Image 1 (cartoon, one colour):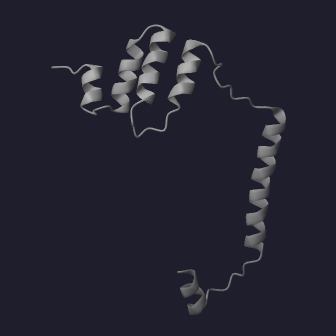
Image 2 (cartoon, one colour):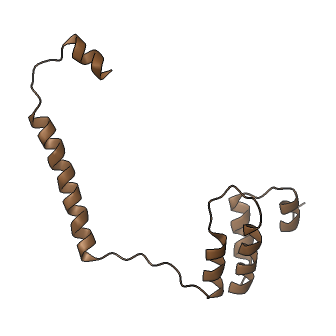
Image 3 (tube, helix red, strand yellow):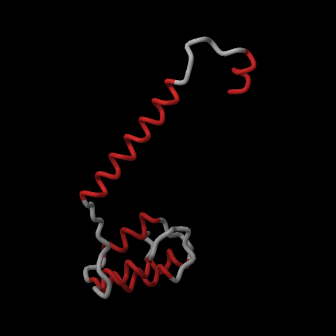
Length: 108
């Protein structure tokens, strides 16, 4: 016998998979927003911004947009180059002679 969502809430038996399945059963943004607000009132262990999602589905808030600009890409490349140059400096300062017993124990 399949449990209804209200019965699952009463039994405190809400997995994220169950919540998503119920969420996708709603057709309109208003129904989805209402459901998300119901979920926000429960003490669930998920880090979800229920109200923000509800506002996006009902149309009162715009969906977040991830923008990539050309300057940001250049900064990423510079950071990667700096990481490589830092490790190259460390490697250049190392000798080829084996570690002493004290140096080896200090590393461990």
